[in-house]
Length: 616
Image (cartoon, rainbow, N blue to C red; front, side, top):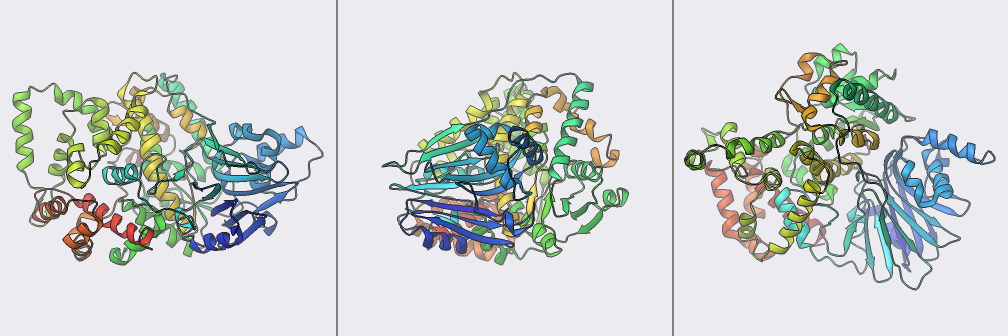
């Protein structure tokens, strides 16, 4: 599937549908259709994955229900069997998950969501009852933006399909802006515009379109258990193995070949080998994976990523809908684009394992802060002072150890919850205030409260699971899933994430922290599962990042663009930031005094985003 859009109570709904279709970053490569009734219209852009026949094109209309659906329901065959058992006379005209989802909603109404395993955002309009039902999957894998303009509702898979609607006010949301600077991505359910929202993960919206005013009712339909129930190592290995195997098998369901990202690291390697053991021939696409591909006889295609960053970055900003300062988005797009050129429509990804099983360096670093704080202060103070004086570059090359040390010391003195938020923040609260021209204490406090909620509002007693819970709800949803879906869809490729499966996440959140980090091994329990499938050299080799040469880009390829977009005239024209602070960042980075590459990259990204989404 590709994307959806809908307009409720708009007199020119048909014209808006045509505009939305044109504004999508990609076109429906297999089908692109609209539906209009009175002042209500739906549109759908299709990438055919299940039931390739045009009978499954959307909007899908059957017996008074009209649906547009983005995503996949992996357990649709089981649900279809249950529907036939409940109503043997039920007639299906397709073999798609689309029709199963529509009929499951007809049978269960809002309770239908409890039984779904998949990634989805969808809308169903009941022509008889004049009601609209919107829903988004458990983790926000598939996006869904919406806005009310008076007594009119517009929704879409992409923000760019909404911003040109008559009456859409382009007032920048300060919480989203501060979050985009602090994290490099837009947090939570915010969007960059006031009055425009994302339907939160695991939520549905209902409204009566025949009423005098549209009154949305938004409700949470699922919340995972956040307390430990798996603490025995052997039993956990067995249960987790079965859970992952079942998820991978579900994610292989398609009427087109399924391929895989294969970086050669633990997560993608485990998913790829599990997928291959389902008996389906698997093609793989990525870098640095020849060893595993040869051992398991994958049809492997190595991809050399040659980004033309000066020209690619503006296009990437437009595709992503929001200012996202992680260049991994560009890598994802280039890999998906290369795979699509070879005819690939579906790629499996190992995303999500780091968040669930304690795989990030910053997680381990945050765990070490309590030990650091036990060092006498008369030792810590001069150590921090010395680190502050050390350069992060010498003779034109970065010094990774110094960079990591400075990063660690930026949060090493904080409380566990504050330290963890700071571990993936790019500014302190004080620095953020120096960056902005206006007081940002209120929006920053919103970010602080959101992080505190996900870190503390659970039954965990260990910091490992508290970090994993916060990452799943914030970092995974806000950054990784966001850029992956938008970058892959722009290349007309569907990326599936077997780790981010309802049943896998439910289990992962119940595994004891000391099974996730044991014997100084991060992702300990997952590595034990992987020993059944992978060679030791793959499982226990040092973690490699899916990054890009961002520091080299800022120093060389993007140097001219930096000077242009972040000039004193341009910064003061926007009125958002203090030029003196930005100049200090650029000067310190170029002198090798400090590493500000990601900060500068996000400032460039934001300026390009404003030109694409605000200035138009």
